[in-house]
Image (cartoon, rainbow, N blue to C red; front, side, top):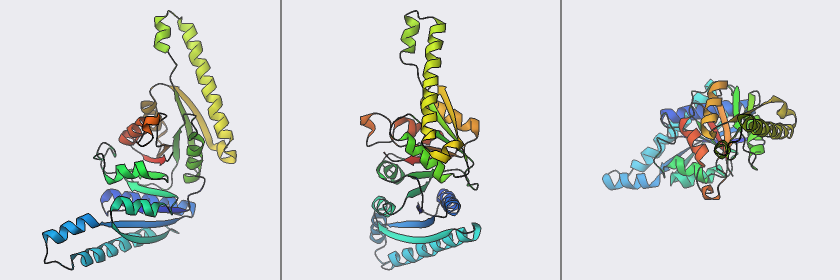
Length: 293
């Protein structure tokens, strides 16, 4: 994803959704993109309401009118607060998952608010946000920090799979003026067995240095493939646990955005959020942009 021209932000009018709509508007204004706000009136919830209050035949109409007023008011606040942002609104009626996913097909980016301090810890498995993260075929920006215009420091973890270059391009596109750090985390294969086999400290350190140098070379090659945007990328290679190292690096550089792939390397993770991505989403204090497979 080299360009984000059409942004979709799903809102339920909560405080967390308000953070997401503000971030979406900030990104849209920065990129000269269009932003559409979407609110879905849940059809199952409406049926429940009618069943509970059978005498309120016009309840659905009133709820729809209220939602229309609220979404237009939100769009107005964004236009007033952020110069040059182009905002349209849309009301859906039906299953929230289906409506949001269908709308996302005509967008380049879906923006969601993170509920609570830990977006995935606080999600019940099978919740709307969890399912959207799994099923969306477009990048998903999970916004959790109070938006400061615009992104200043972005961290891009790379694992040298086919998705790494795309994540770097996406970071350069969504944060055109930010400092970009491309991070690779490595583990020395069989390091524990090397110690048990009596391999000397000097030899183990030599293996580490070789692995680090090879990884650094590959990160630089990825950056070079981005052309002019590659000149903004600072390579970083560390040894350790992937998730923990990503979170530590984000804190170290005071990142306001992490850009990473949705899936891990395992085929078993093909339908789920990869374990490293899940961990980062759970504990990151900044926004996280998840790229689809």
